[in-house]
Amino acid sequence: MIALDAGLAALIVALGVWVIRARSAFAAVAGFLAYGLLLTLVWVRLHGVDVALTEAAIGGGLTGALLIGAAARLRETEAAARSERPGRIVHVAAALAAIAVTAALAVGVLTLPVPAPSLAQEVAANLAVTEVGNPITGVLLAFRAMDTLLEAIVLLFALIGVWSLAPDRVWGGRPGPQQYADPNGILAYVARVLPPIGIVVGMYIFWVGADHPGGKFQGATIIAAMWLLTIMAGLTDAPPISRTWLRVGLVAGPLVFIAIGFAGAVTAGAFLAYPVGYAKPLIIAIELALMPSLALVLALMLAGAPQRTAS
Amino acid sequence: MAEFLGAASGFVLLMVALGLIRILRGPGDADRVMAAQLLGTGGIAALLLLGAATAEPAIADVALTLALLAAFAAIAFVKATAAPDQDAAPAADDRA
Amino acid sequence: MSAVLDLFTIVAVACGAFFFLAGTTGLLRFPDTFTRLHALTKADNLGLGLVILGLLPRVDSVFTGCKLVCVWLLVLLSGAVASQLIARSQRRREMNR
Amino acid sequence: MSTPTLYGLCAAVLIGFGVYGLIVNPQPLRKILAFNVVGSGVFLLFGVIARRGAGAGFGGDPVPQALLITGIVVAFSATALAVALLLRLHDEAGSVTLASDAPAKADADGHGAHTILPK
Image (cartoon, rainbow over all chains, first blue to last red; front, side):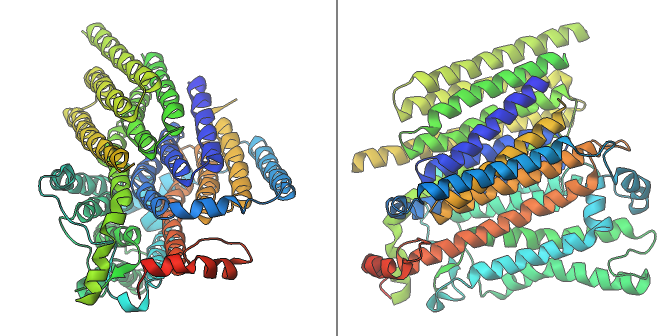
């Protein structure tokens, strides 16, 4: 198996070099897509199936679509950028900096302490209290719930940042260009067939997350991708960002999370603490509330800033 | 048996790597987008073989996610490169 | 019984691996985008189908087996869709040239 | 060499190449890609540390693994924000250069941009 690992590592490094060195931005993006998919395999080799699922959903789906769209729109700016390549001195300095960083990290990797410090024992000892079977979910929503709450809020801020880049005249309008469906086209066909399956799979990945690898991020990503598929196929239009239901949906998840956090401060003595015996129902309530918000925020972030008025 | 499955996984991965070298070099962008499709099929096969070799049942869910999103990059590519024909649409919206 | 099933797995997975070899040979040898697309989507999809067939006797539950079959069906669908879309966009570009 | 050490070294090399690309590539989109390569290298290093902390019946230390999931999602949101900035810059200036003489350049290219954006 070590030979397989060595081959996989070599392939990933080769693709990383391709992403950096490729001539055109589009070639680099295509390499990055392959790179992300291969990272999924690495996560499996490192026994992080939850991480592999996240990488498969985000790296394989959302990031790829985002970067492909950007590379296609920025294609005509590439020729101008080629004349801006920095001089030889900068190249040499950058190479030296890169070698220094790599060497320092490599020394760090080779001298990691043995036995490795680990919180696995603590997680195992306290997981039973939460009644959740998947230790990752336990960490995300009980032991380190603050991180997850802040992450949900960071995502909202990032979306506000994306929206704020809209020109004034289309503020509150719809993101992305108007798409026209070809009723007999293959794209319209797949946008009708795939989303029902995708929603079932997304809900399934979300639901098994309590006890097996999976969870709200991965499920929400899949559902967001399905929504975007119907938008790209022209079967439905992207909503204007001024819609009330949209705004409410975006903040509902984090608000429920915060409300349960304050309720914990009253009933269990600390912000985001759960009263004994209610941990699992509260965790599921948070996940259920958070998932639609996450799906909305991820899809809208990919759709980008508004480009046209709502009418 | 685990050795055989691991070796088969490595073999499929090698085939994928060779194919990647070919299509990433182009010449067209369409060839390059095929990289995602290649990984969608070959990568899933290697992943499932790896999962079977290490007896990890949850791998099926990872493969399911990859399979579901396999066409996503190709669709985004087609939509992004076809976009210039439809640039007239926002202007029409504004006049209305 | 388990020896027979192991043999089945080995034969099916080996056949699948062969089709991946065939697909890659096509990618390396074929002259243009359309033929390469053909090699990629046909041979590799069959290869994946055989690999999944070979892994079916080894799954821990019927449910996991169903998921594996679903994976193959989804890859077939996405392969068909992606190859059509890529080929059409390539053809449009060649006609505009 | 053990599997985690191997991937740890792989991560170190990736971070190095990412840093190099971040400095050398003039195009902002390529810088975003290089940034993502650095990011994935850091995640990989984190994953190696998680794997080394395996114990109590888990294949890896669940705490760093959970933080990784958070990190991957946040990295996506950062990338989306950077891409949105870049596309707006492109719409406004008609070019996406980061060079210090950018204003002059943007004016020279501006005519092309204004024919695309009538308002």
